Image (cartoon, rainbow, N blue to C red):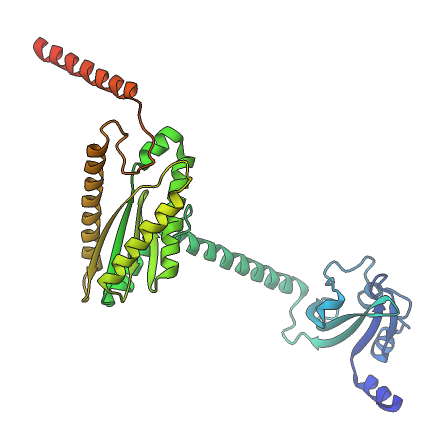
Length: 336
């Protein structure tokens, strides 16, 4: 490009300038600024010459060489004009400079500065509201403690999705002895068991297609498996059992879980399928309790192999309390 062409283009261009990035002093400006502002501009700070400010602009973007061309908008209230601004930070002779291009646009709506501020405030409120709505939506469908989907999401999915899908399988889980753990070792220990249970369930869902895990109650969890077979549901159950054993190794308290399952090859009422899985889980829990009683009558009644045990003295003390209570009841009946 020749100097003559450059001069012609400068006559057509709007605001072009170069300034020192550190001091913000203008190094060069095209005739648009010098003629419009009736000042040579060079040697003055940009915020003083362009906007008549006594202090630097708080809204000026902080840029680096890596940012490339950065575009932003500014409303100038005195002239009622919008400024479309482009900036580029670059280095010459080990000094940082900022090249600027300003295009002025008349405010065709004739909005005053206060109105523009109100619009900006509304945009801020809208953005904040959208963030709050996203947070509320997350709380509505996710369990806070475990991060799994919660009961609300479970019910919605049953009604909207799984009622129309054949080959639906359900695994129903119940964490054993959670109340005992909470009472004896405080709720932090109980929460740790719930999180471990959720981690195992989440791991299973990540490895099985169309599987989705939920925490639907205090100690109750479910896994829904869509478009599946009964064999795939059994595979999920076995996968869960194996991973749970691995996660229990070295843990202070063992996580013991009763599991029930139900499957329907054809379209069915998902609620009925949940009831069947719940009943199967209850039967599993009873079998686990009976097995524990047979294996160790002195063991605290839980299904876990690593469960804490009551001492013989503690059991005898409980038996003595029961005997005393029974004697007192007999005395009362005789008095009556």
